[in-house]
Length: 535
Image 1 (cartoon, one colour):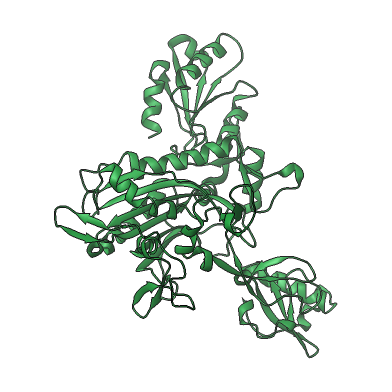
Image 2: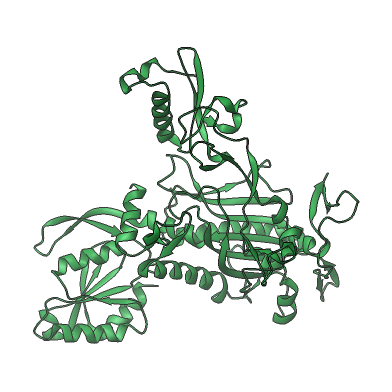
C-alpha cells in the first residue's frame, strides 16, 4: 500500500484534510474530518478507559509489582515561562537546521542524506531528503542534471560510496542541496528552538514572552503536589493527560507522522526509587500489548530499547514502541510511543532549578557568576510515606503516546484491498479498512433492501433504537452491494439489512465486514448482538 493511496482515501471519505486547504494549505497542520474526528476520539477514549477509568486500584494488574491508582489532569497549553527553563526545553529543545541560499528552503540537518559521485575528475555530494531506494534514484537524477547528462549516460558516473548523512561531509562547498542546481548553497548547521513563542497580555516584550507547550508532561509535574494533596492518592500512582502540544518542526513530513500541532496521551507514573525499574518494565510491556490488542500486527510492531548513547542525560532507561509505516524503507520503523524511566529529574528540576549531569550526579546548572542559571520554584515536591515515615523524591516512568501517530498506524494497518460479491453475486474488487470495532468511526450501518414495502420504516426504527448507544449510519441510496462497499471503505464493522423476510418474521441480516459472513437475528436482539460484537 502506497501512502498516496491512503492519503487520497482519507481526503475522499472525510478522515483528514490539509489545514486551510482553500488557501493552499499550511505545512505541518492537519484537520480531522467527520470520520477522522470519530476515529481519533475512539483512540483517545480507548486509551483513557484502558489506562484510567476501568483500572482497579485495589488489585494489582497482571505483571504489576503492586496495586496502584490512576487519576486524570487537564493542564493549560500556556504555562509560566520558568517551567520551560527549569525543564531544559528553553535551552535544549532544539534541532540543527541548514538553509539553502538558492531554493530558500530549510532542512533538518539530520534528515539530509546523499552520495558522493564523480564525473570527469569533478566530485560532488548529491544531497536528498529521501530515504532507501528512493534516495538512490533521487541522487542519480540530481547528478545527471548537474553534469548535464542523460539517463543513458548513467554508467559514466562513478559512485564513491553508499548513502550517508550530510553530517559526514567536511566541505559544504561540494554539496549539491536537495533543491539546488549549484554547489555550496547550504549554510552551516545552526540550532533552532522548536518551541512556538507567544506573548501574554497587550505588550510584546521579553517580560511577556511565553511558549505553547511542546509536551503535556510538564503540566503534570508542576501539579504533582496539588494532585497528591487533593486526591488522597498514595505512591505508586499515575497521572494521565490527553492534550495538544506544539513543536515548530523544521520539515514536517510523512502525512501526519511529523506535524507541528499534535495530540499526546501521556502518563507520569510516580513510584519509589527502589522499584522504579520494575515499574518501567511493567509499563513498557503493557503499552506494547495495548497496540496489539487493538489490531496492530506484531510483525510490523517492535519494542526497541535505547542504547546508552541514545539516552537523555537524566534517563535510567528508555524504550520506543515502533511501527513499520509504509512510507519508510523496508526494514525501518518509526516511533509510535516512548516509555522513559526519568528518575527524579523532573520533580527535582522544578524544586531546585535546571539540572545538568556532572559525573554520575545531576546538579543545579550555574551561570558565569556561580548562581543557579534558572531557579526552581522552591516548593517542596517530595513525598512523605506515612506508613514507613520515609521522605523522598519519587521516580517517574513516562509512557508518552501520540494520538495522531496512533491514528495513522491504525489506518495503515487496517487498509486492505480484496474481493467481495456485488449485488449479483459476482466478485468485485473492494477497499476495506479493517479497523478494530472499538476504533471504527461508525459501528454499524442500517439499510432497507429496497425503498418500498415498509422496509425503510422498519430500518429507520432500528436506526433510532441503536443511535443513542452507538454511532450508526442509515443509508437507503443505491444497490445494497454498493452500500456495503461504501461502509467497508470507511471501516464500519457490521451492516444490518432489512429485507422481505423481515416483513414476515421480524429478522434482519447482519453482515461482518471482514469475513463477509451473514446471519439472521430478530430485530429485538440486534442491540444485544452488537453489545457482544463491539466489545
